[in-house]
Length: 381
Image 1 (cartoon, rainbow, N blue to C red):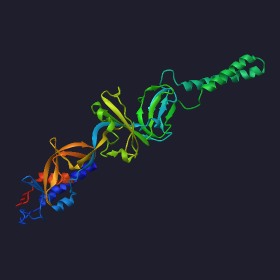
Image 2 (spheres, one colour):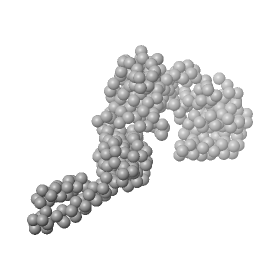
Image 3 (cartoon, one colour):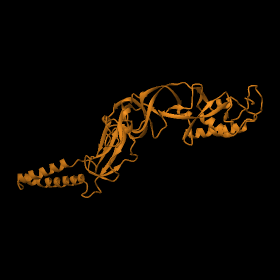
Image 4 (cartoon, rainbow, N blue to C red):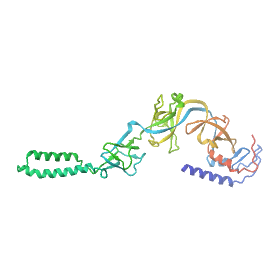
């Protein structure tokens, strides 16, 4: 949201800046009939005019096309999972009705010993077993107290006295002495990845209530469509972008490694082959979150690669902006290939001699649509 408002602010400022420019014509002897100090932005004969001052002010940068190595990329969907060794179960400590602690939701980070839920037996049929045990203790204690002096006086037999004493001891053993129900606590620190029962649901003693997963070492599951089966052997690493963030995380930067590549599709998700990677969580990954995964395969030499931000999509077609000289730009139709989330391969439309806008393409696009054409401007190639 901050990025969006920042872009809107820049665009609004540029529009005001362009509209306030008052150009004056001056022939520079090179076919450029313009005053370089007073250019606004505009589109003239397929060319876009943006003064050097404006380009610097709004962060427009360009660079020459330099082919380099780029990996084949397969973009798929996936999910962040907890490592099996870092999961723990929160279980009910007594039978009864579950009432979660306020704020307990899937994804919440909790500390060891935190109360996840309380179990109440008061409102269920049959009452609270612990309360019944307390009543039994009181009753058997009264009976034992009544028979003790009678036994000492020889009025009550030893057998009857021993039976009363045994009943009292058994009642004491059945009574825990703790408050009604119990508290289900986290045995480890981590994130709550699953709540297994609903609020108000009845549970038995020992029944799992929630799953807590450690957040230090996580697993990335990438669901590869079966049509890419022949490329399985080429996949060595990956990057991913969580659904809640625009940040692309490179596994190579978080101690990531390929864990397993099955040779067959699983029945759990028909038509897909799950590929698992493990990585250290740098604090930006949440267990259970869905992600876009960029599976990285073989290296392709001499590829033309640009930052994703250099690409402008318009009505399903992709364009880049070529810098012709200090103040003139041109929109160029290109064909894009695979992307790793931060860069994209250009399959056609560019050559080594082109200088492409790699930052601030939105500013050039705004200058293109502004319609503020400098008077007398002419640029011929």
